[in-house]
Length: 169
Image (cartoon, rainbow, N blue to C red; front, side):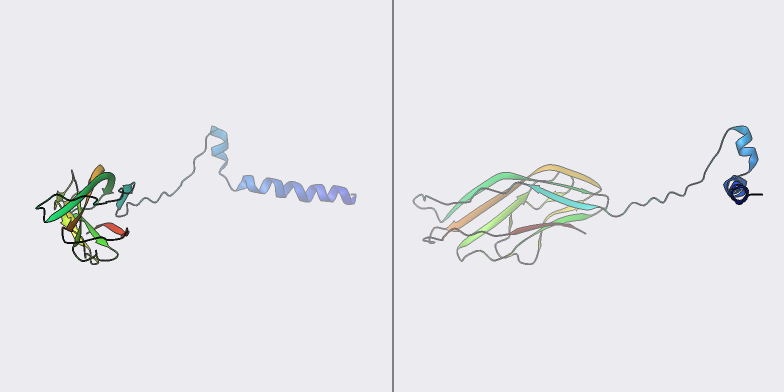
C-alpha cells in the first residue's frame, strides 16, 4: 500500500467514531432528544425611581400679619415595585435647613399609608414617609415639597439639598 492509502484508512475510523457515541435506534426512527437543566429563582425586589426634580422653591413676598411663608411644588413623581410585604419609604436630607426654615415632603401612595406632610428639615437620619407597603407597585405617584420660612427670616441665598428616598423593610 502506498503511504497515501494508509492515511485514508486512519481517517475513516476517526470520522465514524462520533457516530458510535449515539444509539443507532435514534437515527433509525428519525428523532432525537436532549436534556437541559434550567435553574430559576426569584430574588427580593425593592425598586424605587423618581421622575424629574422639583422647581426652585422661592419665597418672594409676604403678607401682613403672617408668621410663616411657604411655597410648594408637586411636579415630581415616584414609582416603586416590590415583591415583599410590609415595606416602607423613608426620606433623608444631606444637610439641615437654615435656622427659621423648614422643608417638608409628602408622598402619595396607593399601596401603603402616607404619613402626609413630613418635616425633613434636619432628617439626616431617615424618617418614615410611607409605611405598610405590600407586594405590588405604586406608579406615577405625586411627591410634594413644601419650603417654609418664618416671617422673621430676612434673606437666604439660593441653596440646594439632596433628598434621598429609600424603599426598605
